[in-house]
Image (cartoon, helix red, strand yellow):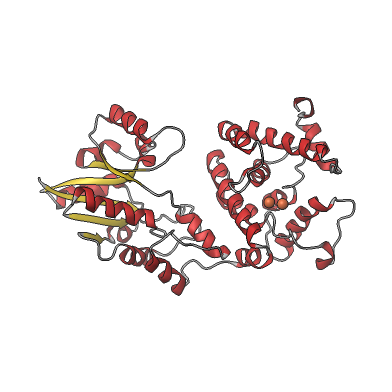
Length: 377
Ligand SMILES: [Fe+2]
Ligand SMILES: [Fe+2]
């Protein structure tokens, strides 16, 4: 069995530069006879943001990996029309390619949850993990690999290559928000997506793009990515988190009179939360009260907030573009425990406004009372 076959599965929605670099590293370091790139079938109930059709994902893979030695793109999982399980695909490949040693390409970040996959032992019976080192959260790649080896007593091959941390989701959001997408994809894939308008911005993205300055759009993107991360971790609907984050500052530069409305007694920095909810509901057709409330109270907070409201409130303060003194401490606290993090962020914001001698908005006072954080400051 000296012939080598690498199985490279994934959603590839779209295939990004990190995927292509992983294939290049494989070719360079392992010289496999075959690399089979196989986009998976996405079950209808699986939540993905702005999923491209299976045909488009296949086509994008063909473009992204074109001209690479030994690489072919397979429609096998997509054609099957049902949820793709790696153990089934790997077993089929092992039966078909009897004289090949099969490698299963994946990122070290995926090893962490490997034990929760369907029939992990079956995967390891027919193939060997071929690892691209990727920065996950918490432990280092070496620790992850060591833990995996101990748990599954399986050999692994690690490529001497550190994969770029690229997110297909971020690429799609950037594209739809009109931000630059340089370096995310191969030029050919990027050009194909733009030419064919595969990921078309809906009216909410268009509204944000057309009504906010670029720096505010970048901030919005940061809030979206962080809110989705928190939502995933806390079991909150990621679609709702995405929409609320996208629209939270949509009225940042608008005035109530522009829409023939008024918010009396609301300090100027707070007014845009109410106006944002107004725009979301009346102009962009958002009817979900949970989403509207997350927008409506994202600056002030309020007593008895829902988890979604807390997520948007916290992500707004901690998104990656923020660099005020103490932000790292707040991020760490929130990563360790979300509720504690939220309370710490709320108290930090309250102290910040109080110190600046600006008027503290009544609702914020009430939130601080409600969560009994005054004495903690
Ligand atoms: Fe805001
Ligand atoms: Fe914001």
